Image (cartoon, rainbow, N blue to C red; front, side, top):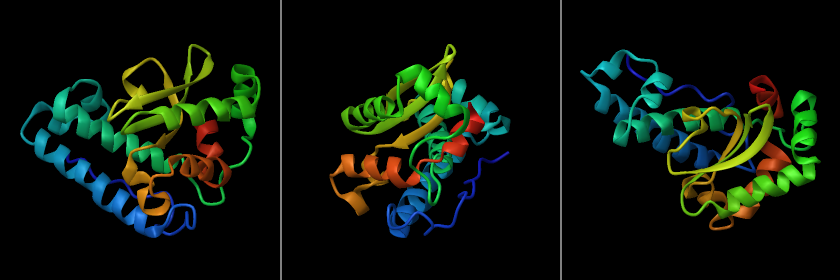
Length: 191
């Protein structure tokens, strides 16, 4: 069973002006697609060829891990975004954030710090771990899927996620994520 590029959960221009169609065309259409293509090349005629993506990711290392994790991480990232998203969380995740961090503002500050200080390429995540919510950051293709934590939302802080629209201003991209893009419905569904 070949791994396929999952469709975006919204139109390619739906996140503009906060993430441009040009960024989506490159990030999804080229970067994400390249991970899918490379992964299929790597797993062809191996036992992983018939495994679901998550199983391949959890049982592999090296290039197979890197490409399978990037396929999974990016798919999760697209669902962590929505048109007219952002703002204060709602539902059960709002209460869980308050219980775990003290306030939405304290959570946002911790998540922003993780996203800004992730040196080089990587990810910032809100996860549920041991009954509490935590902010974690992971380098390169690393993912909470290989841990006991359950991912709720993520932010891709690889430069290709924001450079066309924000150049080197990663903090502005993070602000746009919180103010206009984060999908709290997805976080609630994952909680």
